[in-house]
Image (cartoon, rainbow, N blue to C red; front, top):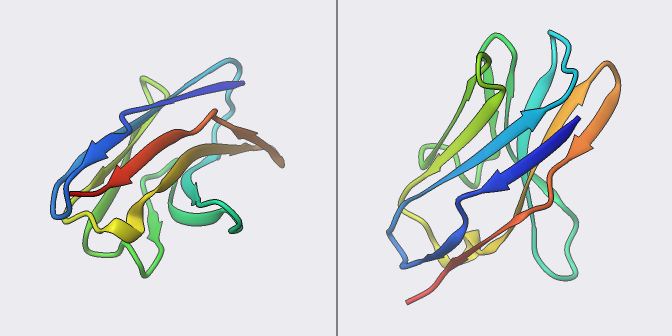
Length: 114
């Protein structure tokens, strides 16, 4: 399984961004996909994750400002973020957990700055 994350960039505070994560390879049903983020010197933290049936879970820090979605037919996951804050600056990684195995994408940088 390979994951390709995209959509990061530089955005002003209060702006919006949509991240995408395309999965390829042999993926079984019942998997979980998620977005994590990491800043230098900090542990990677969960931003949001979503089950195969669409049930989603969000970190308190992004709740109400972000929407996670997935298109199972395209094996693609999205994260729409709005009202971005400087503290959202991080490298964002996507993850797919499938049959007890975790697969990670390469990360995409999100920088929120004026």
